[in-house]
Length: 183
Image (cartoon, rainbow, N blue to C red):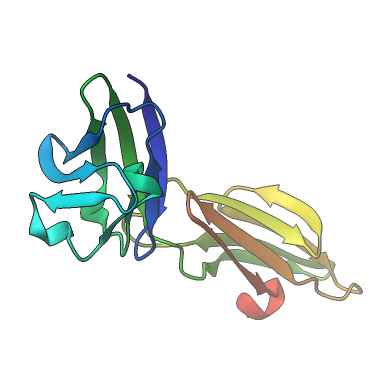
């Protein structure tokens, strides 16, 4: 059988669709522990083997779709739907959505001609997965990665810089002025 990778966000919902199961019934397991048996039909017939899922599971599409709502980190793992002939397997990854990233001034070096700043962008917290960072000025990309070196010459107006943080389930940004931040 094939394994489908599915990504979900904490507090949101995720749906598994089974396409290849024949017969009249599917048995759903989570990490090999039975959750629910589903008899195909309209409406589908469900028998829960684990009541802790009862309030958060919805069966639809005549029994061929299973939705988990109010996801938690503990829901991550392997889900499988077995029928007489086949098994559909899903690997669920759950991540938290990002909060607004914070930009800090790591260093500044000013002379008569202007200033150089080293900025660091961070979106801290557990369960966020891989985070990528990018910088821009307006719509113009300005750099990749959590740190950025900026030079500002004295006669120029200071430019606002935007840091964008991305993880598998969300994208957040924050805009700062290096001169104010490092003052």
